[in-house]
Image (cartoon, rainbow, N blue to C red):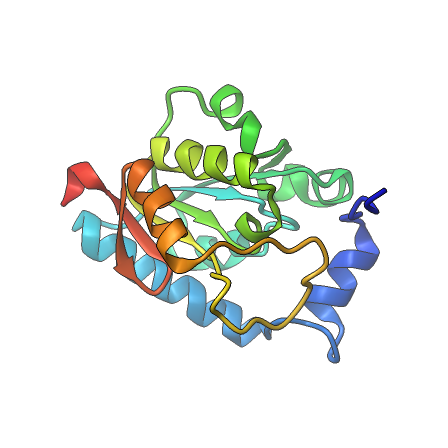
Length: 191
């Protein structure tokens, strides 16, 4: 039987705060968010107004986004009871999974959809649905941190799944997204 991954305070402390294990610093996160916002605004030709963060965890993107764009509407979705209990109200995170997106945001589209450190942990069928659900909610740009089997990765690889680059390209194309580099994708209709 496969051990169920627990996204509790211990998990987030280890992978986001512990100096020996964390996958990036606060400065790294700020650079990433600045990049994603700039890329989205380039595509949209206007400031980002709305963000959907799929697998938001503790909602680490929210305070940085609020600093950059104070009027931005941030919506986070995460399966972690801990993250939602601790940060849900303050950072607008609701409990849910990628399969809940049609229910949680049925007719909504967002200027930017973020999905970091999620896709590679999903079984293939769920991953395909996740990318489709994200594509359906992307008006401007989707920042999808996905690593292929050919990539070298650091961090939490327990429960990790990786397809080939060619397989991910097909799945993403079939969902209606076009790659534009550096984990950024835009809806085919925007090309």
